[in-house]
Length: 245
Image (tube, rainbow, N blue to C red; front, top):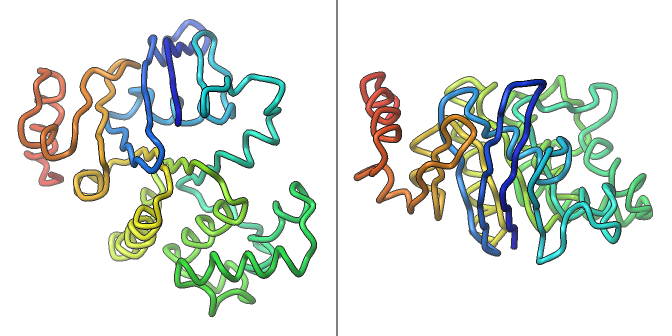
């Protein structure tokens, strides 16, 4: 579904992505892991052109994401993204946050947008909070609303960038459970995470990035149990010593 070839990105003179190749199949969940600064989030944001790469190609269903047939708005309808900060509008109720993009970008009528919003909020266990304000919600609940907002656009692909990083440990589980539910429904996802247990239990494939390159990728049971590349081995060993694996 997603085909990436030779993706390269510089910030100034700093090479952030170095000729990255990656394929993601329909209904597949791919987790990107690696140390901070390895290029994970930049790769994610290049997929829906929040960041423009310097070189390389990204295609969705065989069509380049830079093709005029998409346009940025069309691409972002098909590829949703959720960040670690919830970015909810504090002066708007949950249902208004979730319906904003379908109404303003997709020109959906209010009644249809609200029906869709209530459906995705119910999917994430948040329908009873539809008329609450963000300040009345916990961090985990706000992150589930952020997921609902992305899903309300009915994307083909969902990108998740460290969506549990800003949460207290006791709230991480509820967001992870919501994402597992999305996988069960067959949603294609690319996930940047530092939660190795999450990657191990959720991903169909895990990619380890180092220095802007994918240096090893494998099913999680293989990558975590018997990594082949010395850099992957060293990274996982440090996590094991820190009690995070």
